[in-house]
Image (cartoon, rainbow, N blue to C red; front, side, top):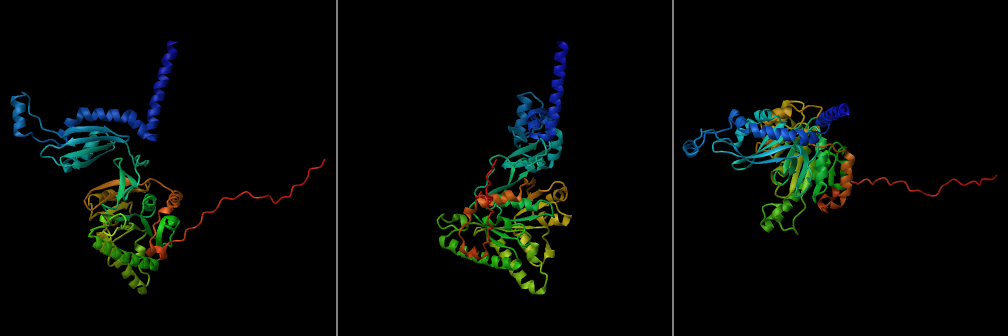
Length: 448
């Protein structure tokens, strides 16, 4: 009996170890909750002060504090580290709120984030300033971008659309009221179209007008016609559509002036126009002209785009510009338009110059990260804005059929905008399921 119990204990231990090893790679959230979180928490607690001291994240105490420590407490004066205010575990890592002492700033911790990551044995350490004097260390115990799972409760609301997952485990949200104009770059098969699908799926649930510009004869956006208020599939249609949008912008400015409002959201709800989001699939198709006679059309499109990018925010018209490259080689007006696009998302690119086009003027430190995105991770990108901050993100995989289903479900939210009626796409009717009817085979009586 004793031998049997020993055998059972040994078998159970081996099975448990094997299960944890399997969970580490196949179910990293489970492994983190059972093993990673307790180990990391303990390592952080016992090595915090020494780690901060070694990484140069301590300062000398004030004169009064040094005097009280030396003469009242009778202890040796030690350097002061950021004070821990709160420790909160999450499904993917650990979040620690720190109170910075005088003499330290968030940039000091950001510069040492890689050393802190190795010291505590976590996958990433991201430093976020929550308010003056306080920062939050967001640690992740595993690579959350390997299998993207959006946090629970992330739903589109108030012109905010969650479209991807950040490297620190939080949702990356496209906020149109904060960054009204955006530029998305990426090579073929980089996940740029997947990013746009997630964006359309979220926007479809909001009371907005979606305007598509897909000059590849609509191969990307025509499937989303049930939720689109307008769709241009050729450069000629795009030129007419942008002209109509500029005219609508001017009409909305008259409305703002009449009510003494500075933007759309200050208007009363009963007179407020519907926000319009313009989705340009491939911007190069609007800039490049195969013949000289198309130059006039190009000038018309570029002028309208620049005017919309400069002024349409107040009128509630927002731009989403996508492309593989976007630089001065596209011709006159390209650099001016790019300067107006606040939010930047750069997927895997074929050359460093393309990454610089999207990020160098917004977040120079992010250029190197965008240049190192591997091919086997489509959907991975670097998101930045003109404030200089940036983060690595990855969009969840979603099929076109799923997005089409969402567009059909929320087709009733398409607003009634007469100025877009000439560009309203034809909605293909779904094929009805076959209905059982009377049989055409005449029965034959069975005779014996």
